[in-house]
Image 1: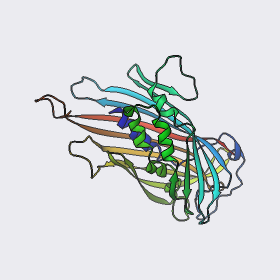
Image 2 (image 1 turned 90 degrees about the horizontal axis):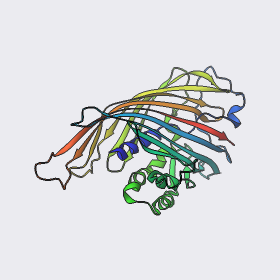
Image 3 (image 1 turned 45 degrees about the vertical axis):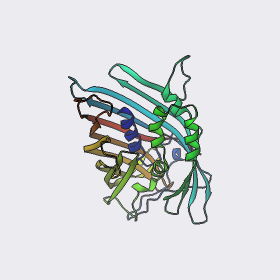
Image 4 (image 1 turned 90 degrees about the vertical axis):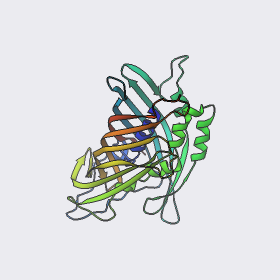
Length: 334
């Protein structure tokens, strides 16, 4: 159960535009951009040779209601990843090749007062400490994924995923590896680099609104579907930069897998809401900060254990109330 919720949380996290708030470098310089009186194009830019390093963080609280238990189980989880993006070359068709490399990974989780996971790749583990999460995350660090973008920043091709899976598989237990192996697919990385999906297709000005639609496939569990409205609220100074403040809100749900086997686990989201804001710098062509807040009710229907004795319950339904906050922040731009 927990591994499936963890997978969903990761998929939700990658719906954020992949650029955040800078502590040094180009974004520390005072913006020279002057807000126009009319419409302006908001487009992601990839300057040749540029490298950004960024952190994605998620904080989640969840109450798990299990039939027969007097009170819900309370679980709190934090998760983060650090990664870099380097612009390698301009492509003949007007597109760009960008390389992603994983720099760090961290995760902690508590069920009530019990610590389930406490892992940070930047810290040395205690002697003799066994940590299956370290086995999964640790092998991701150092992996490199190449993205080939078209002139509109759409992802045309992804390379390096198979090599990363091979790194993860060495010495790993199949049961522990399965959730991340399902997650880190080519489709996941395409979604992760689709930074233009929040951007409007035409020039806009304060007061304009446009819709966005995103779907994130989940192996064996259907797809997460997000439908948002993005509003260009106003021009606003964010640190030293003159930015377009983009506010978004909408709903999310799960689309069932049409090829699911009969009797498989079914996850639905009868109620799911999202809101947040991004600050986009048109001068640099980069989103310098994004925060997303989500609340949802998730219902998980578990099938009967095929080894259960005759007369055993045919299945179980659990209802989870979840809130989470996700952010992306840049550590540096070179």
